Image 1 (tube, one colour):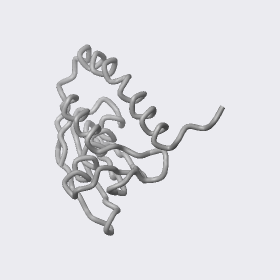
Image 2 (image 1 turned 30 degrees about the vertical axis):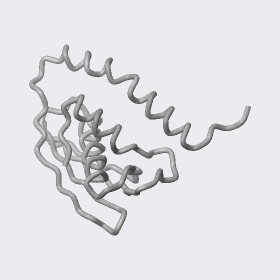
Image 3 (image 1 turned 90 degrees about the horizontal axis):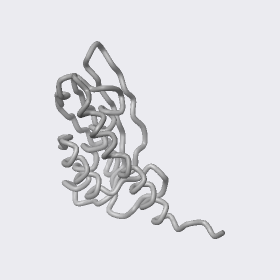
Image 4 (image 1 turned 90 degrees about the vertical axis):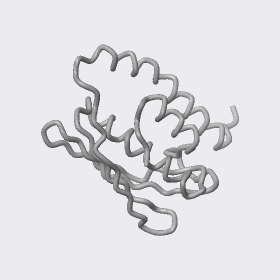
Amino acid sequence: MAPLPPLAVVLLSALGGLAGCGHEQAARADDTRPAPAYAGIETRLLDWSMVNFHVAMEGARDGEDVVAYARCAAAQYSLIRGYGFARHVRTNVAREGGNWEADAVYTISPALPRGVRTIDAEVTVADCREQGIPTV
């Protein structure tokens, strides 16, 4: 069997990630905790295509919530800069009490970058809006 072209792999990965969204939203509906409070996004351009995002939130269920917040910030920032894609480089997550922070680095680009941790900015921003996650 021939390997899939890189774009097909990215599209299949994105669709697979979106397939679980409905289940996640149903799980949140059963959660008795108050809705998370998104406490802000700080953006720092490291060079022409590498950007650092520092995000904070209160009331997250786990680190994945704050990671999603950083991903949404990166996607919107890519669109603001006129780019259509981003690639995740790294994310560090910290928790202190009920406060969560993520320090994430993404590269942004006009064309689909190499690698498996890429995001289509338009698709991601639309998904973020649907989930109620703010962007830049």
